[in-house]
Image (cartoon, rainbow, N blue to C red; front, side, top):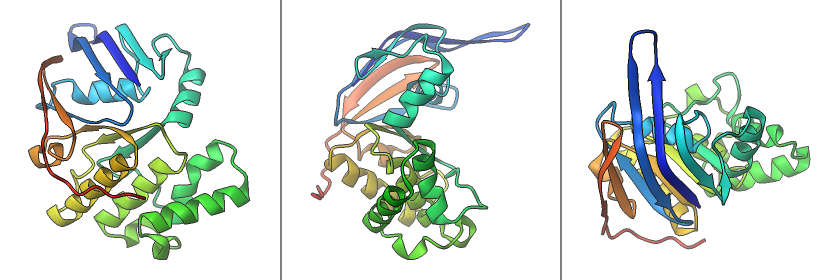
Length: 233
């Protein structure tokens, strides 16, 4: 599903050149749940942004679904992103002025889905994530855990082929954080491909394998053997 070979990213100013990624190579297969870990400045968020087509690489190759992503025009990247990738952010990135329903619906509007189909899909995903009773509320009226569930619903609404999660429990207490990780485990058990960046060893243990980064390179990786409940839809 994802094949990255010798990927590098260099940030340049007039005085300084910083190599955020240095010839990184990874493969993520369909249906895998993979975590990237590393200290701040290790390159993990830069890598996630390139995978999510929010940033470009300086050199190397990145194939998503057997299509080369490096060199695509912004309009082409946007199309691939809308059709294939769902994002879950640490800060939720919900729009405070919109209701829960409207926040979840927004990606469907961007994809020109009909009004009747949008209503059906929002109701189905809200029921699945246990937030049907919150659809008329606004983000500031929700707990952190509920806001992240809304963010997950928005990420899933277009049935993405890959979910990118950037510190998804970073702003949550342990109880709500654990609920989010159980939710990601549930999604993975139902077939979702997930790539997650985290600082948390505990969160990483929910995934199948962990990739460790430092100074823009991959140091090592390990398989995780955590026993988690498997949910079947």
